[in-house]
Every structure is written in structure tokens, then in C-alpha cells.
Length: 368
Image (cartoon, rainbow, N blue to C red; front, side):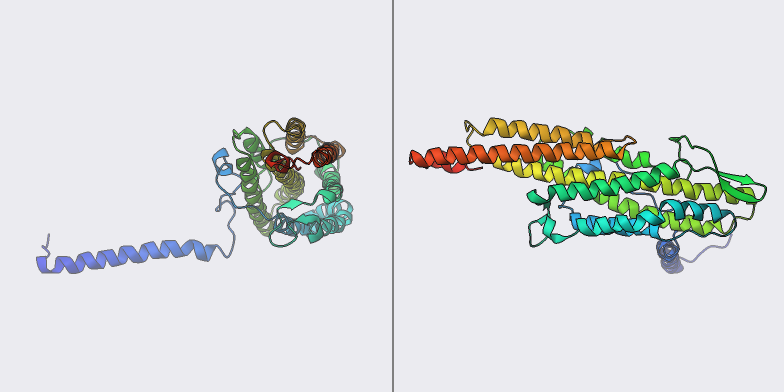
């Protein structure tokens, strides 16, 4: 074996390091180039990796109007017709009958929800729904979920069958929790709600943080999902075998079905986040009361009732949009009745204090 002169060792070592650095840079640059064309399964979903610890992190408030604007882009996808060539004719017909008449109505409701006049503060980043706008908020949000649930129920019954060269839809589909479509199933999304409710809440602000984190994760999740679904339609063209094309078309149907469920859940999380923010405002008023104040006990009872109603609506996972809408109305009804009662009692106390001409520190702290 030939020996290497010692004076050449530094040169050879430098050359080796240079080559290694070049290969590392090439590997680093490769994903950036590949990122222009999304590859199925390469990028992990923010929903898949979601854990309780991610929801307990400190978080800046999530802008609810920005959340709705991003969500609207997701819903607008339903307005675009799927291809209707060959085996996809049935996919197109299902879309035409189920989603096309609903899509514009859904975006219209979202446009109304995003109007700045319904949100507080009036300037800057919105944080919560105005007290007088809760009925409108619940009505529009409930209507959105009704539209989504109606479409989901129809898609849930679709099974594609091959009848002598003509693809048809047939049968009543029984929902199977094992999902074989693209992206990740609804159950992964709903696990985020379960994680959020399972976190031990010691401080009121921490609970709101869990909502900001979950909303932000949902926004990232549906952005990832949209890319995956677009990519799966491109891969559909590469399949040549007819049976595989039929299976692929069924997967498109199932993907839409799962997307509709996830969109309903995203609205449930938004509603619960806004309710939690309103409860935080009530809690801050309670903290400003003297410990022996007459309003403190009824206000605490109101807060407990609101939290219970919110948690029940947030985790609802049933098949009735009307039942969920009723759960939302239960919270609003308790909120309005309780707030009105507290305002009346506070006014009475203030009048009695004025009559006695005693506006001490306790009196000032007692204003609701």
C-alpha cells in the first residue's frame, strides 16, 4: 500500500471536509426543491403529532376572524367541481347533488360571521364576541354546521359500484371508524378536543391558551389536508386499472366525508374558544368583587353553569346538528339570563349604597 506524505495530510483532510459539507448542503437543499411538488406522506400532519403538551404551551391569542378567513378558504374548495371523466362521473354527480347547492350558502354565513361589528374590541385584534351579537353568532354557526352535517350524511351513504362498465352509487353506507382515504381521519382531529379537556386547568388564562393552541393546530391541519387532497387527485390520473380507479374514486368520496366532519369540529372549537373568552371576562369581574360581596356567589354559580354547558357542546360527537345547536343555545340562554340578573342586582345594590351615601372601597369594587 502506498504511503501518503505527511505534508499532504492537511490538504487531503480539507478536501474531505469540503466534500462532506457539499453533500450536507445538497441534502438540505433537496427538500426545498421537492417542496414545490408536495409528496404524499412526506410532511407530517400537525394533527397527527398533536399531544396534550402542545396545548398547554404559552400562546398568543388567536385572531378569530383570521381563523374564519382561513376556514373559508377550506370551505370554498367545495365549490370546485371534481373531474367527471370515466369512473369519476359518479363522484361529480354526488358533488353536484350534495355540495354544489350548499357551498355558496356556507361561504355566505362565514362572510356574515367575519363582520367586524360583531367582535370586541372594536379596534385592533378581535378577541371575543360582543354580548349583543351572541344570538347572531350562534345562529350563523349553527346554520353552518347544519349545512355541513347534511352534506356529511349524504356522503356517508355513498358506495360506488361497477355495473357493466357504468359506475353507479348504491346502498346505505354504515359508517366505519377505520378510514382508508387520504390525509388523516376525523378521529385524529377529535382527539385534540379530548386532550384539551383532559389537561388539568389551574388558572383561567391557561384554559384560554389551550384553545389558542388547538385553533392554531387546526388551521395548520386543514392547510396540510388541503395539500394532501389536491395531491391525491393528481395521483389518480396515474392509475390505469379500472378497479383501482373505482377504489380511488371511492376514496375521494370518503375523503370529502371526513373533511366535512373535520370542518364541523373546527367550528365547535371556535365556538367553545369564544365562550371560554367570555367566561374569562366574567371571572375577571368576579375577581374585582370583595370576598363577602353579595354578587360573588351567584356570579360563581353562573360561571360554573357556563363552563359545564361549554364543555358539553365542545365535546359533542353525535349525529344530530340540531342537538348541537341546542347545546349552543343552552349556553347563550344561561349567559344572557345570568348576566341580566347580575346587572339588575348590581344596580339595586348601587342604588341602596347611594341612598346610604356610602361609596367606600367596597362599593366601588362591587360594581358589576
